[in-house]
Length: 150
Image (cartoon, rainbow, N blue to C red; front, side, top):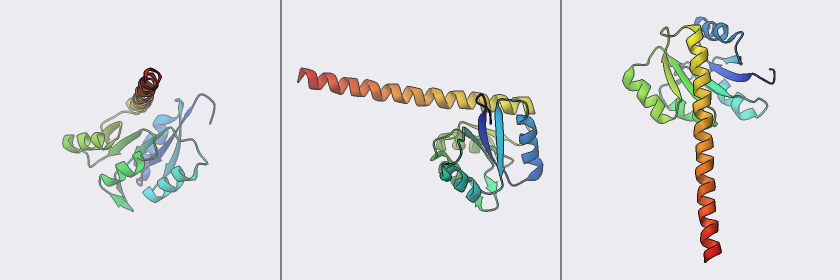
């Protein structure tokens, strides 16, 4: 991975869908690592050996089914984009409410659009993180001001 690239963990059990993502990310700012199971994803993210900038996550995996997996992966503090054939509008909204940056129904995006979704999701995630840091700093400054004025 070069200095100007971002690593994406692709969690997908279907070879054809994974190949689509891997091909879509060729010649972009993203390098992809592919795993087939949620257990492999958790192990990969937990190891600390890799810098992962985003996760593309299928929610219908052999060792994990449903929306609970979204929260499990979001706990690692990286942007999560759910990509599943199971998504409808209500489920997509629920996925985002759980913490995912975006939700994509398989077969509805082109390779170019997928790369753009990843790029924008990463920007949104970093902007949100920056805003939270600024809010915390503002709170600390307020507390310090209170302590100074007693």
